[in-house]
Image 1: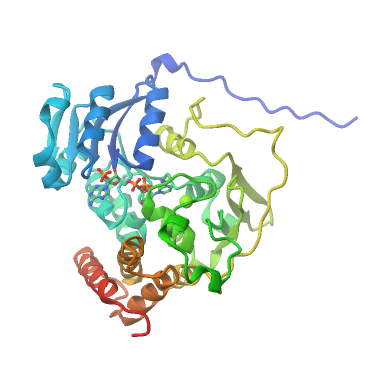
Image 2: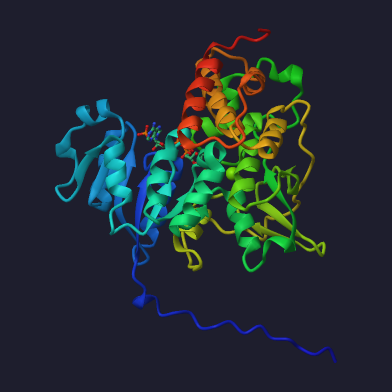
Length: 403
Ligand code: NDP
Ligand code: MG
């Protein structure tokens, strides 16, 4: 008879004796921010909210404060701070303003974990301030690593700060990598839904509108990342994010299209074995995993419906049509100043597309032009990266097709 092996799991720790983790959320009024608050709402014994930061939506921030009664709330935008009705905030909450307010929140000794969920390069400063004082950062803001990956991971290492991914693909890779070391890993394959324009031809996409680009088939996200998903720039940024977060060579990272968004990425090991992480497309799971790492507890995220699960499809990305993807592989390989320039050009180009000032396919063309025109620096310090960010935004703002 076949000898039976039994896996014996250790008994669960007594959750009554676990102190809640104390959380600060940067970007609380956005898609990741509100999903984070839903995780906190469901796990009050494990997670406690110390403070929130938003840019301009002061009325939503005030409503969040009335529900959670945090010690701090920050409005980054000075005009919104001046316009905010203080009477809408509970008495327990101190309302702060701008970057100083964010710094006060993330460095507070009572904060254990900072959720970095601001959109764009604007998220770098708060993430940096948190890492500088050794806080654990649950990182949704991939742009932080795209702009300054080597500086950010070096800072985290020097300060003993943990950087835990919230991006679903990177959370999947992180989970699959647990227990392994660099020489075990052959490559990482990031999955992507393909976005709303999967299967469309270049000719069809010449006239694609913002309304069409904002209709994502599987995820509900903020407008910038939704457009990035339509161009596949989101996957490009994720290739760069994975390169720095996991210390991989660019050649070890690949992308595959998976329309169902159930397999969140693969890790292939040197012996040929492949591990993946699966779950329905629901950001509350990777957010919870980053907040409670390494614990797993029942939470609010949707579970796989095994009865309705049928085929999982995979296909190669159309790199001829979705040119942004090549930019991601190229920038991951070159490093240096390229990430900051690509990211800033993309933010400016997406802004122009949403304003009706740039055609859909011109987003990648504009990014290519600005990247090619920049003065490459192999190891720029932070202030040089920030100067290049400003330069690339100006270039992208005045770029015209054919110039
Ligand atoms: P949203 O646009 O929904 O939210 C952005 C948040 O950032 C809002 O709280 C907004 O405040 C705040 N914000 C905007 N500009 C600034 C600024 N200049 N300074 C400070 N705060 C600012 O974005 P998402 O939640 O979709 O995305 C957030 C980050 O997470 C992005 O980096 C994205 O790539 C990443 N991510 C998102 C996923 C998702 O499912 N949404 C999945 C994986 C990664 P206000 O609303 O008050 O203006
Ligand atoms: Mg992602």
